Image 1 (cartoon, rainbow, N blue to C red):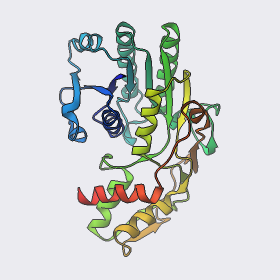
Image 2: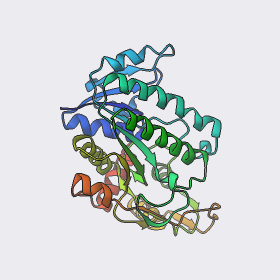
Image 3: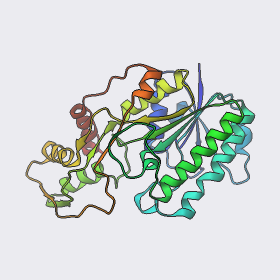
Image 4: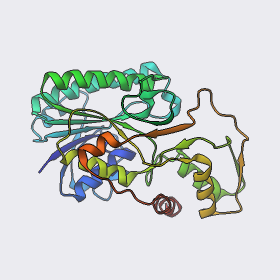
Length: 303
């Protein structure tokens, strides 16, 4: 049975990963900062072995003594849209990765799973595989690529399996309140109207609980080191998503499509080909999109 260390466990993706692994009886160690808000982990936090990142570095010994065999690295400084062009802030992710890799070597870690991003590809227009050129357009994507090269070189030199996941659009319960779905639910409940672009962008929206199931399989399956896309197998327009949310909550709410312009360099179709990953872990069953969206909306309406 695996014992998994998760960084970024208090975030949207990390918390869902931890909940899934614990439900499958996999021991979870949560690495966090002392002041981190653990509200997303409230239902299972007593089942997590917590390690706090202290300023003098003593947390390293706790990791070395933890007995974990796998690391899922999801922590990242600068995830908000307004921070993605900040090169100084994004570069702060590299020293922490290097420290983590050194600890992984000392702890005898067998597999490291890193949560990368479709932003590494740059401007996307269609369904793409992992051999699509990586042409990051901002500091966020650029630093993700830099970390991938560091991870690859370190793990290859130290016989550690490395799995780099390029994650596309994910939605579900416990997102940040300023992200599209929770902010739209809030606006609809307040009444009035809301401005949007024409909404023709097509994204492959993956339900977060399906995402966490994929991570469970990656943890539990021998997989060749490399880059893998994580994406829904189907894309849909952002307009259709917004309209479905509106119709579920208040069909009278007015949506002003076309009131806003697309941002420069807007990707109009972002979807990842997952055949490389499914060839390694086997077939995947996805939750029906409308059912997953109803679960998500019910959560936000009730919270």
